[in-house]
Length: 366
Ligand SMILES: *Cc1c(COP(=O)(O)O)cnc(C)c1O
Image (cartoon, rainbow, N blue to C red; front, side, top):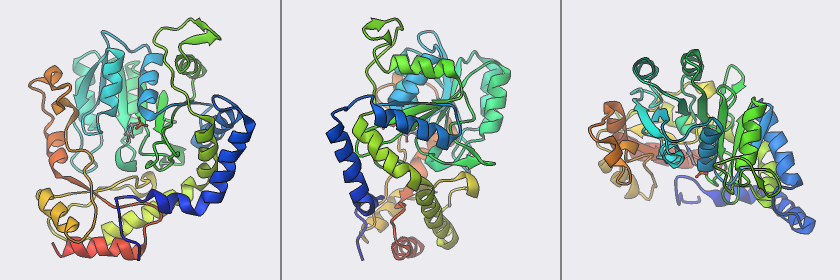
């Protein structure tokens, strides 16, 4: 049996489609067109279609997607963006890059997703100019209610879908609920390229057009930089071609991830381990994250049996060394506790049931 080298195994993921990937890469090589060409155009159409939205603009990575989404919504100096602090700093980095200030809602202790009551409380008390909702670990936040609350106050909503490609609520896909959905195609994501990649999706033509200009120096046309805040953030043709091979496989990959997660939830019986609160149809099992008050001990117990695990994420954004001076005195108690207790178990589509059972047995014997 292959051993688990990491919480996911990209060799096992790409190996079965190597022939198709090589053909896609070679097609680009022979075309002589490497940036913003036909593969990017086709992928953008295919991904917009998959998400059930009118527009997709591909970008260099998911963090740029968040930043350009904010800029397209005119977020910058003097603006305030509400988000959560347990989602790996990506939203915070993007907000700070625009010159705006992050404000943090706490999370729910069960799902570790944005606490809507806290969101409402903050919206009622202070001026908020945009909301970034993270669909963490592949689970949808209470997106319908969040969009309703925000839009009632004319506040735009950005969905961070970097862990939620294909997650659905009543048949509607992540990224299609708010004003803009942001995706990363980093290799370990549910839909991951062979390098960096990202995109925004939106139903609003005006926002798509703004992001399209921002990703290329703020150009309205060649060498005419009409829009401020532009940068260089483009998806390569090779990565677009690779993603076009993978997109048709995403749903079956997600289905297999869900099976592994369900097996964990059903069979992990250790009383000190809390399974994630999952709404089945909305969950694409990007990460299977348990909680325990004695995380270090469990992590060690797993490592001693050669079982890898990881922590997503160990430090709340407001406590990070790079920016904690901006958030003195701020604590979100559920967020802080979650960061101290979460532990991510191996979960990827090619993981064998026998490997999942090894992890389960090891946890139950802790
Ligand atoms: C990975 C990730 C991002 C950032 O994507 P990059 O492509 O690495 O910049 C943003 N948000 C979340 C929730 C992520 O998991």
